[in-house]
Length: 153
Image 1 (cartoon, rainbow, N blue to C red):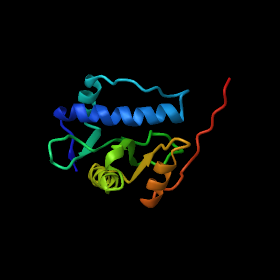
Image 2 (image 1 turned 120 degrees about the vertical axis):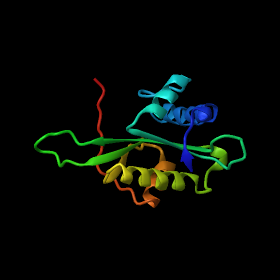
Image 3 (image 1 turned 90 degrees about the horizontal axis):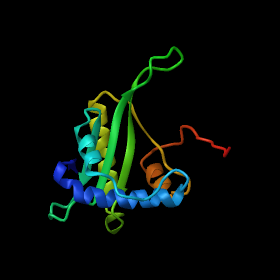
Image 4 (image 1 turned 135 degrees about the vertical axis):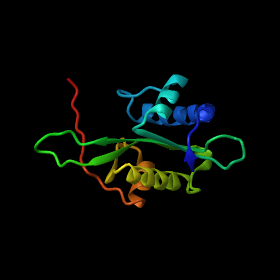
């Protein structure tokens, strides 16, 4: 597991396409599969509140897994408990590389970085219907914190 670099873009783009296609399948009213611009990759790498990690085998074939997260502080509101959180925004492991511990190692490395930034917890969103993600995060000790409800208008 290592910090992502600009030259990881082709492999990162392929991984993003994989997770974007899954999200478009699970929640087509919210997501669509498509190309992401390389500029978004560079902005993410340059963001001081973000960390992007990749998992690869050092064989020059590019990343097999990608994780991005950001740290943020609770808004200064009188009814909120003030602390720093990390939000795991993206985790994807190439289909061909799953069940080899890459996702688990990426999450562990992300937790280490978040702790070093002063975060006290990691939060994430798992979309309804993604049973594999639900089971993966449960095995890592994640529990449901809230539910987001919606209704069409």
